[in-house]
Amino acid sequence: MAFRAVKGMNDILPDEVQRWQQVEAVFRETVRLYGYSEVRTPIVEPTSLFVRSIGENTDVVDKEMYTFERHDDSLTLRPEGTAGAVRAYVERTVYAKEPVSRWYYLGPMFRAERPQRGRYRQFYQAGCEVYGDKGPNSDAEMISMLVGFFHQLGIDGLEVMINSLGGTDTRKRYHEALKEYFRPHAESLSAHAQGRLEVNPLRILDSKDPKDQEISRGAPSILNVMDAPDREHFEALCSNLQALGTPFRIDGRLVRGLDYYTRTLFEISSTAGELGTQNALVGGGRYDNLVHELGGPQVPAIGFALGIERLLLAIAQQPVSASPVCFFAPLGNPAAQRSLILARDLRQQGFVAEVDGRGGSLKSLLRRADAIGARCAVVIGDSELANDSAILKDLTRHTQESVTLSALSDAIRKLLTESNTLSPGELI
RNA sequence: GUGGGUGUAGCUCAGUGGUAGAGCACUGGAUUGUGGCUCCAGGCGUCGCGGGUUCAAUUCCCGUCACUCACCCCA
Figure: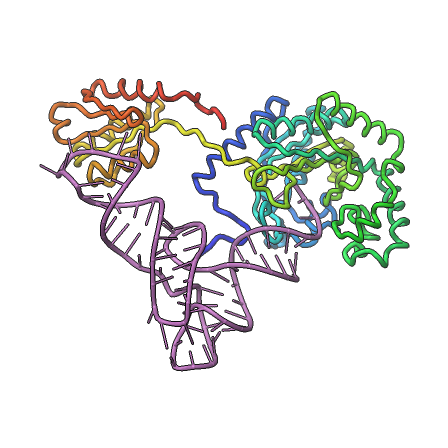
């Protein structure tokens, strides 16, 4: 094969795109009800934006970015959506125009990781960001919204995990506490964890290495290091979730790989469908300092990103509803030309029509009509043209009738309409 | 970056040291203009690529590439 797609970047063929669009439509409708509006930002941003926001010592920045030089600029394909959104929020001084902004986005992200099930180099995320609301009510609402969204898609086996990193002060203190705790055990830690010890001891907590886990068990809990406001925030979040009836689990070892998070942290995973080990459907949390760090005022914010591919893996194969199609099977050129006109008129009324352009025997034409799942077929040949008529076949009922061309449009409309039990745009 | 698995017709896969098969799909036919079932027929594949062993390799060995799953990390 001469050309193939870049490793980890996939073609999404029309068959699959249908499912994508359904998921996207449910997402858009869900967030719309919560007051979010879409924002679209560039896929390419200055490299420094990601280094600054995600953090220098993160895996994403260290080894997963698609970075290239263009003239004197270092540019990077966005590895996540929050940095660009916040950049836009600050650059366009949105904070000066409205106290609270609720944004959502949908689009491709790029990370140069080794691909595996549920993880690709170009992958799609849908995400929300709320600026100007310090929570914790908005935190709970966001998590609850996500759970509702998953339910609507029929995804079960959900697990909601939350944690808090505390504010800047708490986080600093906790870092120190962890270092102090781990240092004596440094020898026993995995090589990877040892490397993290001084730089980002939080990451040791979520190591899957048995030795690290064993040692982490005795590590101080952030709950003991949190100051009063942090604690109140977290407790209010839990209380809100309970009130909303959203089951959750507190996981003190839940940590994100992006540095900008503060306070509330959450992740929702599922065991549904064909998900592999990469089963986190969504991750998110607060980033109360990021707007400020990127040059804006001190505006608190919270957001999440969910992986569309993983969502699709989690959703059991579901039948897709398609609009009924009227298939034209013309026999000969005069009939074909007539079909073009008839089909166009039908489309102007909002119906899907397909005209066979290959010719062939009537048998093959009808087989084709079946193959695409057409609701009805219009057969026009010389004898039909001779008396200004056509044969309208109901492919579901196995009936057919001869209809004059002037009455054909009405007859087809009646047929297609009665079979169309799904309203346009109805989902899954 | 590290490990494991796999690489044979469009797809899913069998298979043998003597140059290869099934099912599905596709195309055509079974009344010269009538469908989803059935029946018949048809195409065929550099058996991932390169090297080695051998009289002979798709089948054995080595390398390489690709895909895939997992680790790391994340959505």
